[in-house]
Length: 408
Image (cartoon, rainbow, N blue to C red; front, side, top):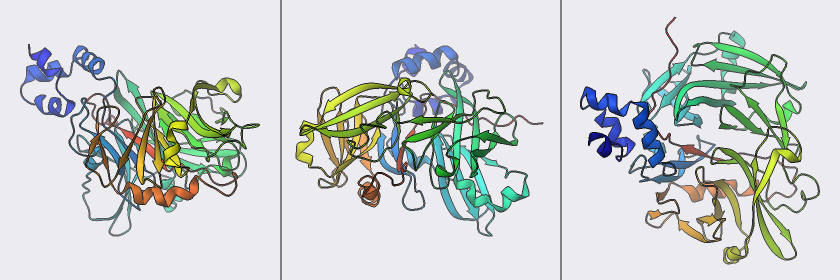
């Protein structure tokens, strides 16, 4: 009876009920309980659309809460409250992956500090600076950071903090901190176009792989940090599926998103007086036509009333039928269902509303941020910078604590 009741509660309640008694803790922590709970809550997880320039606005610009799995009543990003042992004068979120957050903090005397944490459990671990004195002096370059995780049965068992150091001669250096060893290593990796995808670009993390957009080519760069590479293994360079004859037909600059465990890319194309939205899923980390699968091609005739002043934001991370577009003239977020062709418009000044996945949709100065990003999508030429201006912060489907290095 306890099992049948507890397994139907949100994770917010289960996190508390683990402390009721030893029997309940053992029950909730069991693999059978975890697997059954995840099977009941496969697609209703709280998540946020986050902006990648955290020093300008807050973490969330659009939040999904009230979802069945967690039962939260606030933005997921609102749990990123942070406490340091010393007074800090600057705080910046560098990356969010599988419920973990990488933060840069600056003490009142200018000392740099970096933390990885689990906001929901308020667990934070300070990452030591790399031992190389040159890296310490150049700590501001730590903004070129990524965070990847290793998952087992829905829980994070390991993470790596990645610091990118690009060179002009077809090579990059990765500074990698591992929670397994508690130490840094420098990995030198051959990589073409290395001078064109570093500095202000934020990577997308998925399945232990980081993905960076490239500036000067219709491609992106990927590297698997849990893939067991050889010392001379190079980065993967993958061109977008519309490179070539369709390049002049696309409407927006290229960007990437994630959905249902895959990297996805979508763009609008014109032709014969019609607007077509094409959505591709990355199926293989190799360059060429076999890398992508076209799984949606949808007419946008139902969006005529929105005019032409809209641009793509992200895809729903758990439902590849739903995409998010920002409408400038309507000043709202458009949720468009690729299967039914039905869309809904949600405005920031309106009351909180239910969205297509059953969660509550909330805004946090989204309009202000979207206006500042408008120029990235309607360039005078397609040779401009590709920029990941928004990503997803998805809470985990199960309770997992922050992995920590084993004591030596």
